[in-house]
Length: 426
Ligand SMILES: [Zn+2]
Image (tube, rainbow, N blue to C red):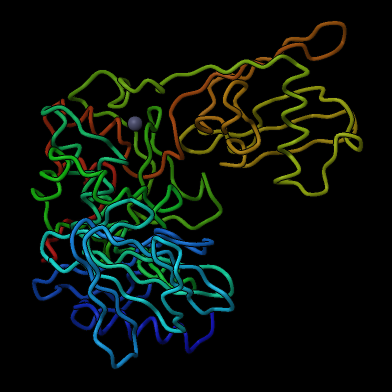
């Protein structure tokens, strides 16, 4: 994206929206202590670099062009336009396929009823506004939405509605999602937005995803953010830690943070791990020898480009060589006839694919690796492990267990993010 285009997006954003009072858009580093009571607006890449988008709304809506002296065009309820791009220019067509104009600048789309109206992007409803621009032959649509509405649509996707006893787990998850968002603002600045709407950041489902019990948890914690040394924390979270959360440096190559140290997922109040009720607290996967080798032949080249089955020969052993502080496997060795491949940290989850679903292994917290041999060849590999996900930060099933054990949401946040403080931003 050219500098001028990026600048233009920045200007559009500033004009259209009431942003933080003097807030920086850079990785949360300089966020102000207060937002003057305003809820910050964020940009979610809901349709990044796609071939086309369909725009409409559940009520009347308006479509404008940035930098244009013309007033936005009023659109009737249910009217739908399709937007494609050609050489960076947006081409607009109505539902009958008639060409309705071309635009070189960014489109902005908003519902006539700014309080309760919602827009439709490819048939999915969103609160807030949409920005649409073209780069080459690809179209990007960004949902500009206030942080509270965003978290309302993230919570049901990330934790789902929960029974009353788990209310504080939902509240803790709302604080984690809000904090993660603020700490990563501008992560995709080069692409013109703050966050992706997928698992790569947080799963964001727009208006249809909202659930009353989750919205209530967001409302209960409105504006509450976990901070460390005055900055919103990188509040990572995952489904099930398996008994002990991990530190980022154990799992990824990215640096850790004091508040992300690994913690044992229990206290003296209980006699089991808080996430013991998770269906993935313990798991076992089993491959036939041939099946395991076929899986490795396709997945190892993704992390070791110079590896090939022809060069390394048959698999002769699988063993755990090293564990990190949280007992996760930090080095798993695959021994071949002519060489060894050591898998490190989260690589283990991406190389070892589950036999039925072909998804990655649920966690790197492996308990045992058993290899059976027949006639000098590996006939079976069985791996048992605990947990689901990277295991860094808040354990979602653990938070549910803590909530059921009577802990409040602030206690849950303090438990998983050691040394972090809670602050109400607005
Ligand atoms: Zn846990």
